[in-house]
Length: 72
Image (cartoon, rainbow, N blue to C red; front, top):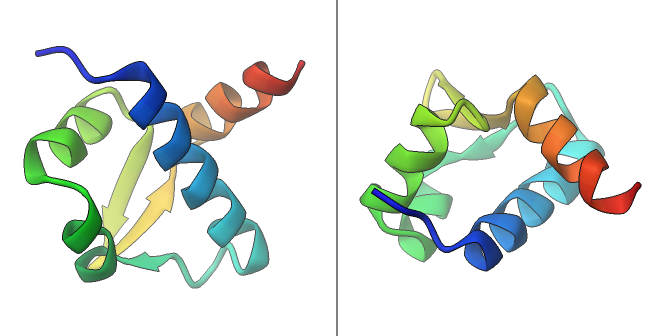
């Protein structure tokens, strides 16, 4: 399975910006599922860029590192 890197980058950036506001809160998974298909989200999860806890989606440490690497 191969994820569109541009779509992945945009997704992680958006998630990063939303998570920066309130890291503890996370993003409701239902809000994300409306915008992105399950296959895409599963691939992000399998790559360990995101984690899901209590129905909320969080950017993982690896996801944060991916974002920071884009800007360095």
